[in-house]
Image (cartoon, rainbow, N blue to C red; front, side):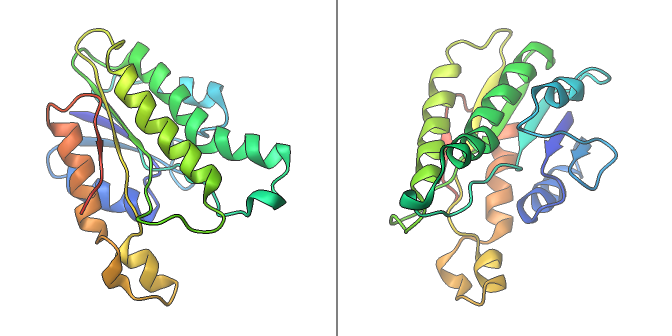
Length: 194
């Protein structure tokens, strides 16, 4: 399979690349790669598909910073929602028009076991993505599939922050969830790696 991988240089993206590369051809997309895209720029997302035919697209690039609700400006709300929720919706729409028949779209949501301060916009984007993949699955043509991975805290991220990583999920398990969705048959599912 030929797979376009957004966020290929991040912690999760590198792990997903390592999980998929032995069996598939990857087109890495990141700020550091030859191929670049920006979830907030629809034209750059469309350009991803102009010069290549892919079988799958995986997005590991999306995030929403933790910010207290009372401190958010309207511009920050829109920026954060564009960067995670609306950007991935735009990516999925473009992928659906260009992927090979039977192709796979895998997005990134997120989850926290307990609400944490500053996570309200992230929770909104994550819930929106889970609902989007569940409903978009009924609309996709040509046997295309769409799913999401919803990781919580990643062990290696917690350790890098000086925290105990045992309460997180190892990045290799998170990457295995992405690979399972790309290579499997699931449709309209949001997987929470354990």
